[in-house]
Length: 76
Image 1 (cartoon, rainbow, N blue to C red):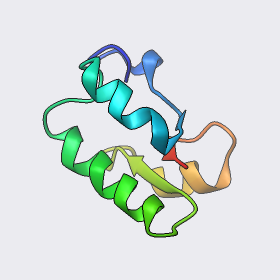
Image 2 (cartoon, rainbow, N blue to C red):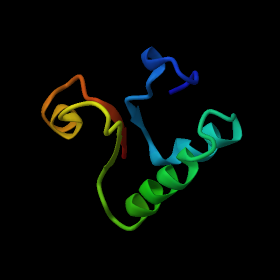
Image 3 (cartoon, rainbow, N blue to C red):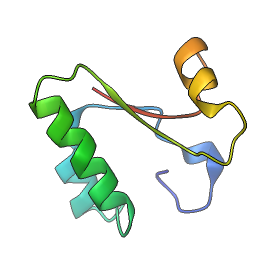
Image 4 (cartoon, rainbow, N blue to C red):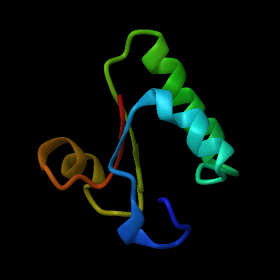
């Protein structure tokens, strides 16, 4: 999320190149850093896209993969 605890500011899609910028701006911080770094490593290793989801949302993986709305952030 661009603004902490504001669901409406969820970043739905991010390019792996933007990660460093968002970390330097303090948008990606704390416990999200290792998660996003793992996603970036996967992208650098040849994975086409990764997803970070809120596991508290029922069926979040299905919502993310099967709808245009999504339920998390896709990193590509």
